[in-house]
Structure formats: structure tokens, C-alpha cells
Length: 157
Image 1 (cartoon, rainbow, N blue to C red):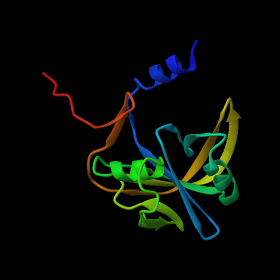
Image 2: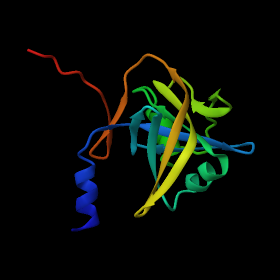
Image 3: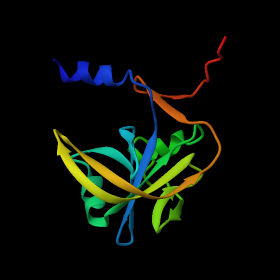
Image 4: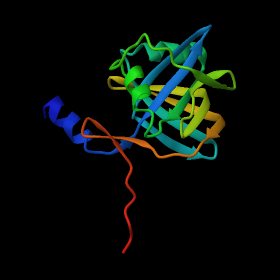
């Protein structure tokens, strides 16, 4: 099967949009990702999948901590910034939870200690033990078929 066919099929799964952040020394690092999932309630674990070629891979390993911020439908510009699709010179203001940078006004920010990592194919799965959470109100930014969108609730008849 062609890689493009596989990628197109995966793009048909609608997801939310997250920014993964960490702090290594005094440096802040972030990347846009939609490969996120909740793993366990007891203990509270989440996972993110990061390409083995990404700089973030080494930053999380160095830090031993990371955060996942769920973006609102008003934060597409932030997603594009961390995906390298917008002006990288623009300064992003962070909030801090447990001394880890998180995206201001995100719908949720989940801060984790790195529990373990597992290399799988061309990606590494980082499993994080949740140590803190911040929640705000709003609507999610979505991603489907290579395009950003907004959540539209379905009315039950």
C-alpha cells in the first residue's frame, strides 16, 4: 500500500489539536500534534506519538516532563506556529503549571512526568503520568482531511 493512501485514510479520522510543550534548561519547546490519547484512569496516564526525527523527542527525554494543551477554535494561529506553518518569529506567551510551559487559554492543559517511552516504527510513544491539569471553557479546534475546523454538536431527534 502506498504511504500516501495510508496517510489519506488516517486523515479521515477527525481529531482535536494539541500543542506538546516541555522545558529543557531555560529553553521552551513546542510542537503541534494530533496523535494524543488517554491511556488509563488508574493510574492517570496519557500518550503522545512523536516522529523519531523531531527535535521534541530529545527535549522530552532531557526534561523528563511534558505538557499537552488542547487548543480552542480560537487558537488555530498557535497550532500553525508550532507546526512551522506561521511566522516562527512571533512570540508565544506561556502559562506555567508545575514549572512546565502550557498554552495560555487552552481548553485543557495536562502536565505529565515521563513514565516511559516506546519506539514503534518511525515514531516514539511517550507515556506520561498526569501530575496536574488546568481547564477552561470554550470549543475545540478540530482537524480533518488536512484542514482545521470547528466542532458542531449533533442534535438528537
